[in-house]
Amino acid sequence: LYDIINGVMSTMVGYVKDKPIDLVKEVPTGLPLVFADPKRLRQILLNILSNAAKFTHDGSVVVRVSRHKEQPERDLYIPHVQIAVEDTGIGIDERDIPLLFEPFRQVDGSTTRQVGGTGLGLPITKEFIEMMGGSVWVESEVGVGTTFTFTVPLEPPTDPDAVMLDTTGEEDYRPVILAVDDEPKVLELYNRYLQAEGFAMVGVNTAVDLEMRVYEVEPVAILLDIQLPEKSGWDALEDLKANDGTRHIPVIVCSIEEDRERGAQLGAEGYLTKPIDEEDLLNEIEKVMEKLLAAEEAAAARMPAPAESMAMPEPERIQTEAPLRPNNLTKVLVIDPDEAYAAALEELLEITELYDVQVTHKGFEGLGVADKANPKTIIIDLDIPDMDGIGLIVAMRSNPSTNDVPIIILTERELGEEQLETIEDGMTLYLNKLDYDAESLLETLHEAIEFFTNSHDD
Image (cartoon, rainbow, N blue to C red; front, side):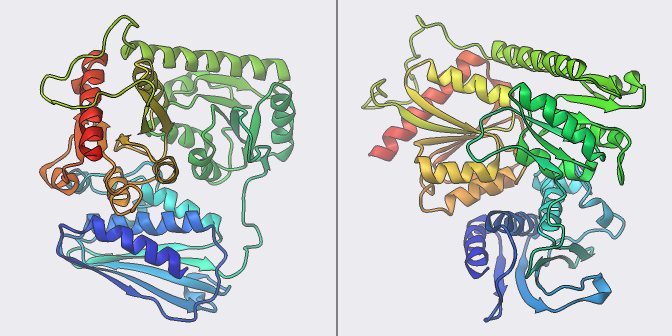
């Protein structure tokens, strides 16, 4: 726990370097071991701390850790460690606090536009905390500050994982179907059908579990029941299609309800009425997969790769001494949640035979890849689903292995002056996706990568 907290606090130093904010640790000695996934715990802390720093213009952000046997007032009756992140920021209106952890919601549009970010980190954070058997709550006063508090148990919870069925493996490259149904026998039936056709399957029994696992699993399609406990499948479908990070995933409604019109209106790509036989299920999956492939091809068509005969444009504004050579490919890491756009960008760069491109779609995964792959340039879309994009850049600048790697921000998001100042370091370039077609984007990226590479080598 000490190492995780120290590591995250070190990352946050870079995040607040241009703000008059003190980062404070109040961590007692002798803390016990906790039951937690270290990667998830680090992600939880980084999300909460970056959120606190984002909404704090001056003052302090304090991490306070304590040990408790139980807290009956919070319905906590097992030994746990409590971690509180307290800031002196703008605060949150009491009416908005219940919205903080709702998937795909923001609490104050005017405020989030000023500071940036999607507001998606907190719902995911809550799911990770509860997945480990912990709890989270918020106390805030407008104009005074906010305290986010969460718990981590000392022992495994009695039911640590709501996943009912998971047939994926560590070295499993099969496409994954995420199925949502509160009947275990239905999930077992789906799994039997899908396994025979070369799919892996993850089955969950509630819409809440779906929201928790969808970013982890990265499914090629979702089978969604409508009559679910806690939250209906209709609400889950609406949330999935309202979010940039999940709207591209095809959803097939599988329900005893016959309401195809509503399903189509909410964005479902397929609809099956129970009972469902094997042939109907596989045919419907085949249809949505064909639609997905067509969408990817359409995205690639919007960013066509240059013809083989088209020479790389000679940079006019940037003079370099050593051109990039095909026999010495430049490693480029692309972090973009839009799989179709990322694939088209990868093809656009690699067809030049100048670049070795690696693609990932999540921020924390990108941090790990960047640490191991040693890319010469990193291209980042800021609207990643699992963390704030600006926070990702700050984290990379705080990591010795990536602190001097050139970063090209390629996004549709407009950045304000304060955000531009945050990333201004001479090694970061901001480009808006909407300003470029394929040819001009390739030329600009080539010039920038070549310039950064030669500057770095010098």
